[in-house]
Image 1 (cartoon, rainbow, N blue to C red):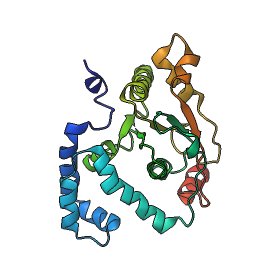
Image 2: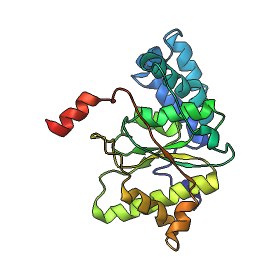
Image 3: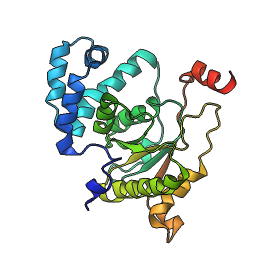
Image 4: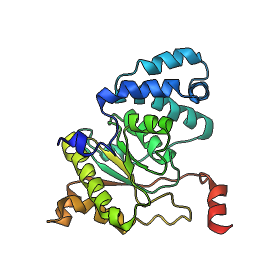
Length: 242
């Protein structure tokens, strides 16, 4: 069994799966609204033809997702700053562990910043509770997102953790792709950004002979995200206190 088959149920799309994913996106009922939001000055049918012509993940990210992020940045951010990218080696691959405040922006803003600094974008963890529906799955997996199983029972938890740990190691060391992962399960809603120890233990599962060596080989880079206005603050307050 090759690695593509071994991780088929969680990995992003590979090259020969991209054209079909683009077709599903272009044919979706929500496409017209999405196209008008991301490309307000272009004809919807022109955008549809562009999407259908995409053949690679890199092309999808640069032709579509980069512009999604730019649209969000221009409409909602007055100043976006980053420190530390100059300390990264563009030839190296890293495991970026980030605090988590917004489902989309935490990882997507990092992708734009990495790209503009001359680095490759990362693969991105995506909760199985969010990767539901044909459109969300097609966009996510075409955008280098891979599934993290949420709410599995105790019987399946270890198996899911072992597979995720193996995939992370395979992606960093064999595929030579960086990864973004949140430091805990779900967004922080109370400002407590401590890393879940279970995440760190999961990293070591793919090499249980030496936990320190296993973690060291992943080239972990901590990421701290801060927003002037807390994303979804009203919803988070309701969930916590009402």
